[in-house]
Every structure is written in structure tokens, then in C-alpha cells.
Figure 1: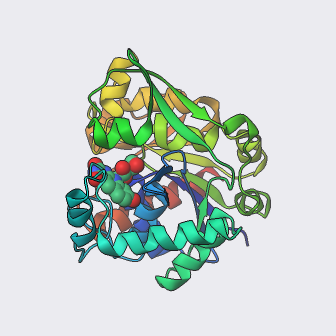
Figure 2: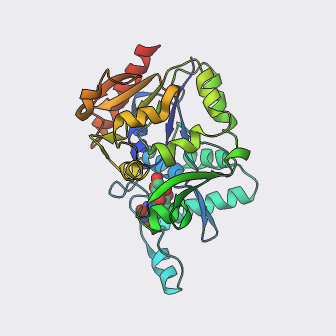
Length: 310
Ligand code: FO1
């Protein structure tokens, strides 16, 4: 029996990922995570979405911010400020140890997939966390003043710049990781696109050369959970980006964005009026996840929905 593949970015998607990890065993479920947000900072290779998912699955994430680690201290970044270093991207002391570990492993020739597997093992995570690619892909957003590296847009400039497009630098030379292609080719049970930002968290994964073909060939339903509820994004700049791209900030637009790739689309109860109105099959669920129970319930609905499409 094969596995489900959950495709996710950062905070929003990681909530559903935790729900899925609670109802499916490691032999039933693997995660494909966006690495377009990765960047080199202070000499360290930072992989924010991989780390957000890893800490979330380890139940060690900072639940206020959604990123970084719980029980954190900030002596490094405070001291860096004294030396005039860059502190706009806040690195906690415990989080720093992860970035140093990854950077050293990559420098020694390990792949991002390999070092992520050993970090997950150290954190007691049994599910496979699979970076989307072991090749370098870097997301830039197109703004009136030119291309902006993703973390500069998202963190330093707090998503203020008006966005007119995206570029994923390096993607034409990149490939989905062999581990991800194996999950899809090996009797895959279904693909869940978690409620992450379609443009900057999911598209870097879908646009990898060969990824869409592998998804179509996997022989299992592909279902997305809407990150837009009632015209707003639960987390992050998705709705703002849609307005700036001059497309409707609606769940239906997200389904249109994914197009023919989808076999099903999960709408929130607030958008139940769109149920049955889309070109793709829909189901309605409570998709605003405040508690672990919410995460588990949405995961259950999504998996049952996939089973109904087989
Ligand atoms: N997001 C912020 O808004 N401010 C930060 O200072 C910040 C630091 C940070 C450190 C490590 C990490 O893994 C993530 C961090 N993030 C921060 C979140 C990160 O920018 C986003 O999670 C993703 O890139 C978008 O999903």
C-alpha cells in the first residue's frame, strides 16, 4: 500500500500537516515542502518552510509566531545587534543550532534531503519531511522597484511592496527530489495540497520540471484545501497578492489557479455557497484551524474526500 503526499509551505500548510500526521502513520504519509523561501543569511543556509514544518511536527514550534522554535532565547541576536549585525531576520539561540547543523552538513556534501532527514531523526519526527528539491530554487517577487528576494519581501519589508509577479530562480535547472518522485510513483494513495500560499509556497513545488507530470501520472486524486476563507487569507499575504495580481481574492480563484491538476477542492463553511459551483468537485469543511482537534478534523475530512474520489 502506497503513501499520501502532502504538499506544503509554511505556517498555514503546517497546521494541516500536523493534523495529517496525527491520523496517518509514517508508512502512509510523506511531506513535500517548499524551499523557494530558502536563503543564505549570516553565512547560514536558512530553510524557513522546512523548519516550520519540522518544528510543527515535533510539536516544538513557537505557536504565537508560527515559525521558529518554542522555549527560545535571543542572546545571539541581541549580541549580534551590539556588533552592528543584521537583526531583521530573528534567529533564536536554539533555532541557530539547527541552521549551523544544516549549513555544516551541506558544506560537507550532504543534500538538503539527507540533512533534513537527520534533523527530523534528532527531533523524533517519524514522518518523512522531503524538501521539494535538492537543487537551488529561490523565489523573488516582482515589484515596481524590481525583483525582491522573498525574505526581504516577507520579513524585512513586511509584505508591503505591491507584487506584480513571481520568479523562481534556478527552477529550470532544478528537479523534484528523487524521494518525492518515488512516493508519487509507488502506488500513491493521494496528494493533498495544504492551505499554503498558492503563489509563493505551492507554485515553486508544482512548477518544478516534471512535477505536474508526476502528479498526473500518480494515479491518485489530487485535492487542495483552500487557504482563502470568506475572501481573506487566514495567514500571510495570499489575499493581498491576489488583489495586486487583479484576480478575485476568493476560494474559487484558488481552485482556478491550480486548474486541471485538481480532482477535488475543500472549501470552508463560510464559502459553502460555492459548493458544487466550481468546475472541480468540492467538499465543505471547517478549515479554520485553531486547535489540534481542528487540525485533525480537517485532515480526516480531506482524506475521506480523497477516498470518495478514488
Ligand atoms: N518571519 C518573520 O516575520 N520574522 C522573522 O524574524 C522570522 C524569522 C525566522 C527565522 C527562522 C525561520 O525558519 C523562519 C522565520 N520567519 C520569520 C518566518 C519565515 O520568514 C516564513 O515562515 C516563511 O519564509 C514564509 O512561509
